[in-house]
Image 1 (tube, rainbow, N blue to C red):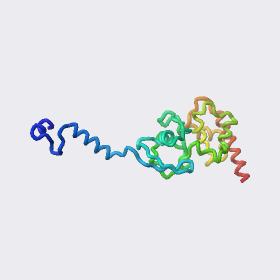
Image 2: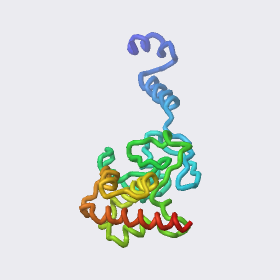
Image 3: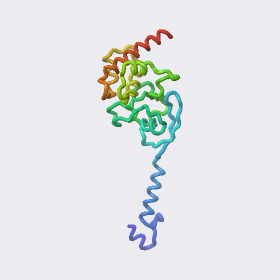
Length: 196
């Protein structure tokens, strides 16, 4: 088509002189149609953040790369290890499997928002006291998942804790110290509720 058309009048019916002109126009048109970046408004740890980011990025990538909240960890990026767990409206969610556009207007809590006014959350204190963290890579996800559990069950038994944390893999500890830390924090939170 191009060869015959160009041989007669040097342009096709759309005004293209050669196939490269056509390809350039086609690429430019497609870039206009596809939003490569988007302005998002995310509520994270009680603060509103506006971020201009690529539409293909996961919540995990936006948290770490655009907002520099690096406590949430990259793990498998397949939703199997749980290292990227954050809370969305109080529920544990794997940040590697969700797009940030899906959670606009919802409360996102990361490990950076667990301590209040510089005071560690009882879970953080219990993890430190019990030696529940070794390398620490899974700790943010364990802490956030445990927080969600304690919000809905203030006195969980060890089986309930084990089940709640089962989606987050730890390659160091064997989980015993983690479960003990969550039990300790549950007790401390119960005392705090009674005293307030």
